[in-house]
Length: 296
View 1: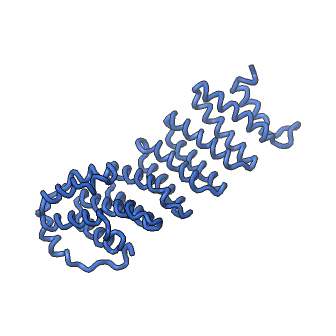
View 2 (view 1 turned 120 degrees about the vertical axis):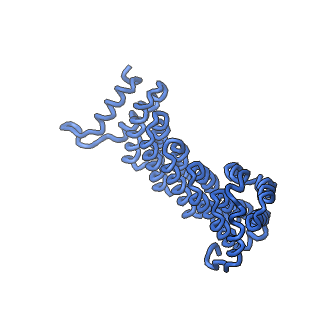
View 3 (view 1 turned 135 degrees about the vertical axis):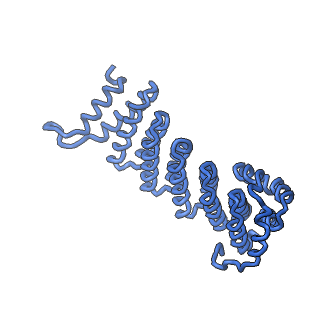
């Protein structure tokens, strides 16, 4: 009974990690095996709280045994259980710690994946923390020259920004995606990211920023040769002309229909404000010189 009772396994493991008159050094190897056995037994019994604690201790044991990879795996398990328990603060802490342990192994991809898992779990309950984890996950891959592996992360983070109605942040992240795509010669993804950023600004009824974004992106030669550039050009022209029907027509085009769903939904609602009120101002400012320092 004692060998299969997770409570007794935990008690025994805890004793092995504590020093006493008869034990001058902790037996982390023996304790870690017991913590792992207890964690799995608790999980089978659907005792998520105790399983979480056991996995956390098992992770600590693997760290003490200089095995950060196994420690990270156990920390991810603890994070998943914290999610089941609705403890969102622990979810963020556990997945972030798992990422740090993977980094110790020199593995940026699983480190980024751990942050992404945490972000997914936090999207509804702690969306701001989710965005932080998503962007940190992107940074890990960017710094390792693996930008193309971050594309789904940019997409997911953008979606959360839009849900929070943080449109400027969403657009800025899309521009960051475009730059990352440029680094790995992903021309199609780059074009989609730039067009999406312009649409986000237009949806936020910030024509000046949308036009500036369009002008900046137009300085990237590869963007000028894409269908996305042509769609963006038509949208900006339609806004300058105050042509509501043309805006709606372009928003229904096949080029925009191939963007991510969250962007398509925004585009289908264009225009969001009084376009005729923008016409005079937009026309007056349309001749401003381009900023040669942006996105070159």
